[in-house]
Structure formats: C-alpha cells, structure tokens
Length: 138
Image 1 (cartoon, rainbow, N blue to C red):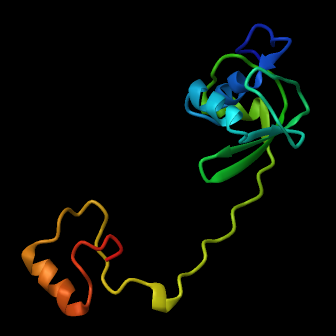
Image 2: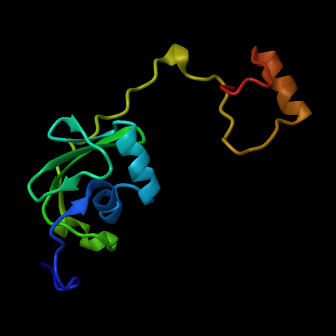
C-alpha cells in the first residue's frame, strides 16, 4: 500500500497492470501484445485477462526490446513515471553495444533523414559517385 493509493487491489489483469506501470503506451497495445504471445509469466504465454500477483516475473516484448520485470505491488490505475519503481523491479539485462558497421557496408554519402528530395545538383553528384538518386540507403 502506498500513500498515493488508498488500498492495493486484490488482483489485477495483466494487460491493465502492464499499462499501469507504463510498459505499454495504451491498454489496447498491452492486450494486442498478450494475444500475440509477446507477454509471458513464468515462461508461459498469458491471455490479457490473467491475474498478476506480486513476486511473479513478467517478460514483455515491447517493440524490439524484451523487458523482464518482477511484480512488486499491484495497481489498477496509471501512475507517474517517478512512482513506477514502487510497483516493479526491472530485471532487463543491459543492451549490448551496437555492432559497428563493416567499412564496406557503410554508405559513401550520408543524407539526413527528413532532408527532403535531393535537388537536381544532388542527384547528379550521387550519379557520379555511383548511387541512384531514389536509393533509400544513399
């Protein structure tokens, strides 16, 4: 029981708990992740309606990242980011450093994302360097 909540609920659905502790931006995304098999408790896939209990280990794939958390306390309302550590313990191992690209795979010409369409001058420069102007990797 925390000062900000009057009483901890007896049990909470896993989709609601994942949303409450801010692992997913919306409850709908948490439900979809459960249905797709991206959420596991104790190594078993879970349905969105499964109750979560303190002490359980929850593994959730959020985008490209696999988050591993231990349930410390239950809550059924979304809390501020500063209060999240009261309800979960993050067991996710640190991410490995990004692999360095091999020099032969590095692009010869870097064009910032969102820079817009290359000008005629840019396209001619790219063609001289051996790249096509419409190549997204150029």
